[in-house]
Amino acid sequence: MKALETRELPLTDYQHVSAEELFARTTAAKRALGDNVLVLGHNYQRDEVIEHADLRGDSLMLSKLAAQHAERPNIIFCGVHFMAETADILSRSQQTVILPDLAAGCSMADMAAIEQVEQCWETLGRILPVEDTVMPAVYVNSAAVLKAFCGEHGGITCTSSNARAVIEWGWARREKILFFPDEHLGRNTANKMGIPRDQMIVWDPYMPNGGNTVEAIKRARLILWKGHCSVHQMFQPAHVDYFRKQYPDGKVIVHPECHENVVNKADLVGSTEFIIQTVSAAPSGTIWAVGTELNLVNRLKRTQADKRIFFLSSTVCQCATMFRIDAPHLCWAMENLAEGHVVNRIVVPDDEKAWAKIALDRMMAVS
Ligand code: 13P
Ligand code: SF4
Image 1 (spheres, protein in one colour):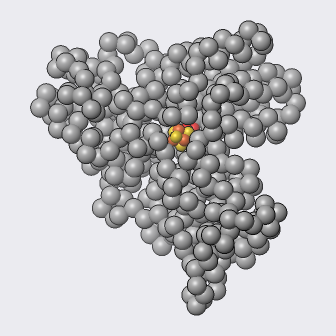
Image 2 (image 1 turned 90 degrees about the vertical axis):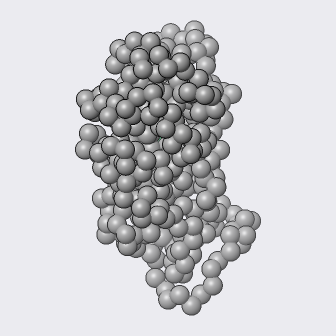
Image 3 (image 1 turned 120 degrees about the vertical axis):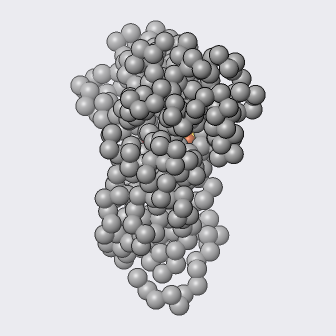
């Protein structure tokens, strides 16, 4: 890397650069950086971004990869904010994590604020001996401060790949689980485990007692935070019915962030990596409807051209925040790094980091 004499390259200079030039310049800057950079890409990233990723995967895989590559001083994370925070927590202190666009958040992560979770904990504490009876379990699609909350209160994180193992881990230790912020992942996982409906309640952070009676809270084994993914909630049971009518031999595969009414009608359910692996390994000529983010589905269509692959609903949009990471932002971050400037560094404060790492390490141990 060059010395720090140059000025930071402004993002506005990248707005009108052609796709070909952006590709060539990003490739050249990455080559110049060599082993000084690792580019991680989530399965939802656009082609123009994912083609520069050294490694790609689902949330769990990317967390593990960030922890494994201590030799790379810089990680450019092509995904959303909570993923880059997780990479910062799991990487070494001398490594820097860069998110090419800081506006790449997650609408679901925004549905649980630390103040609301603390308020919920306090309310539960007035009803039960909360520290002994309730295990907090947070989906990785959440701010680092919520992971830290779980670490500090004996809890754990989970991803869409290990939610069942995490819930089993929690119930082996405490009577109840507070699962947040995705209601659907929690409910779908519990449904698969055969947990009766009267043992699950929904916690609405805007209602007194989360919208529950004291008796229902005492009876519940699973307290599901009222939060959801704005993309996956748009898939409807009617989309599955329509596909099945057109293609009776086809299979439906969806992400567990979808509503249970969709998940219960699907043939297979799993993380983004599970979806990719399953469809890729399927015999030639098979027919699939895929209920997850559009970029992933379009890429599957192209790479698995020997199969017939459909997006489960033509009216569902791509994830607007994942989409924020584009070729201009990636080129800007890469060229700045090659010039010795770190832009958009993601830094989780040390006290948060320590507790959040405990929650993530607990998850890694059960995954
Ligand atoms: P995965 O962990 O399956 O990659 O999912 C992340 C995500 O944000 C899904 O919406
Ligand atoms: Fe968040 Fe949904 Fe986008 Fe995943 S698809 S990053 S859960 S908004």
